[in-house]
Length: 272
Ligand code: NDP
Image (cartoon, rainbow, N blue to C red; front, side, top):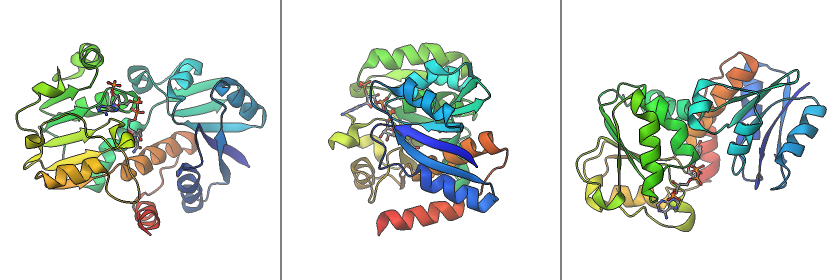
């Protein structure tokens, strides 16, 4: 039986084993998917051991996405641009690195929520691994503008320079964000410290979609804040998680699982 794993630290919270096991059942693929806790200073050793066990592929999560990027022998274009890898595929002795976070976000917004990104004015908060992974896929959707805002402004500026050849992207400091947006995406980890990025609450009024990449058993504090200040639709990142997993499954197995049922099932388990 082919073996796959999600590797991170911590890892016990990960929903990936459940998602991929459901995908395998649905598509009748004979595989086993487990979670692997890698010691913080032994990511490469964990991968080596997993390869010797016969591992065929792995999802990589916090804090190893950059190390996975360095470890890969071959990188897909989207992984190169993201500078981070969330999917590894082992083909004989070759390690292929990919990043499926971006396509996961696009599919959740366009397919699951039915909101087109074409001509949209988008504000993206954060310039960490998750934000980097979604920049190219967003710019490829014929959007109107992408404003990138980050606490460390220089990071946003650097990314804007790197990605400006792919579309209309500008950097902004939090204190200077104003104007009208159709979609606001939170790719910061501020929720973890129960903070809201330092942004004016006026910008949420009438926004068609406020999307928080974080998810949990109830709306995140960012989602609540946006809704209180006039956002029309607010959505968490559970759908993105499932869609990125489906893309990964496709890369590994050559078959694309359906996601709607799993999204409903996980959502109801989370809220129980
Ligand atoms: P990183 O640690 O790489 O980046 C964190 C980002 O958050 C940085 O831009 C940082 O700014 C910013 N930040 C942290 N605290 C604050 C704050 N208090 N105010 C403003 N900005 C802040 O994390 P990731 O990019 O990997 O993950 C970000 C979020 O996305 C997480 O919540 C994660 O769970 C989620 N995620 C969800 C996925 C999904 O499938 N749903 C997939 C991947 C990630 P600075 O640069 O200034 O430090």
